[in-house]
Length: 452
Image 1 (tube, rainbow, N blue to C red):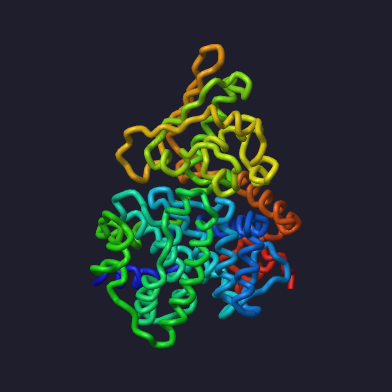
Image 2 (image 1 turned 90 degrees about the vertical axis):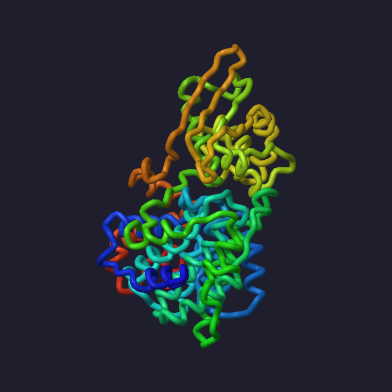
């Protein structure tokens, strides 16, 4: 069978009863996390601009928008806006080995599909999430060379498409056609990352919308390319320099990728998280902004590539979230990095800029193109002393997960940022029993701020 057939058969054939408890819990936990992050994203830089653009594409009331009470759009436009909001503050969960944010595209697509063709049960939603995550992560981990295209948008589209097709009950043949149109719609490069531009969440937004569009086109009966993944001009050939699909495909049904996903405890690029934690460790050893002479973060090449950029002025939110120097300065000054640290006042603070100028990211010789760790912070103090902190596991990873209380604290902070803190307790209660809900909109309407 072709790779597309293997992926489609897995996504459509997955049975919730066969999913292990660890993956079931992860699906509900990261859905909760993603919904709250998406609500906070209603206050993200450029979120209002994205809403205005999407609203101009046509009127309709199918889809709710997270964190925006009473706002409705046609489903594909709602998917676009929600996906932008989920990734717009770099706070959404990540699969580190795949270098992929799997929940941004598939949650936005599932939410829109639920609103237009549902309601669906909590179990239906969670099973679609498990299936969709398996598809997108399989494509990501099959890559053997550094990413040049933005995987959260490219392979993320196929995860969202698979989840949507499963939710709609599309046939195997129609879903294979949809994969072909997904290939036709796939886009998203790393150029936006290199320049620190808000086009990154726009690419994810487009992928979520394209997933619904591919299913819609295929559902009309239009035949699509069948070797969409491993054909001579298929996804892997076009979008990855090197890849090995066979081991990743063989893991389907044996490894449930949602259980490998990591929380983001800070609203920044995942590549900056290790540095933040290391600096917090150095602060416990006595490091302060006043006694720091120079700080070096020595990390794998991927980290240098993603967040090793210098501080610049004027500093934009998109650039700052991917700038370890700025993140280090904020951490040294405030002890952590939060949603409020990317407002115009903070971004233009000359004290933070001066402190960031003392921070440098250096690449080590790690040969793994997807490695985030190990890494080491080396602080040279003004009195000549040296302090070091080593990070071997990222906070929030499966090996070092957030505690249940840390997870809830993040959810509450996101909802408070969106002006929806009163929703926290009832939403938490619903998410604890989400798999039992006959109608998942009981939870979705809360996080949209729409009790009706």
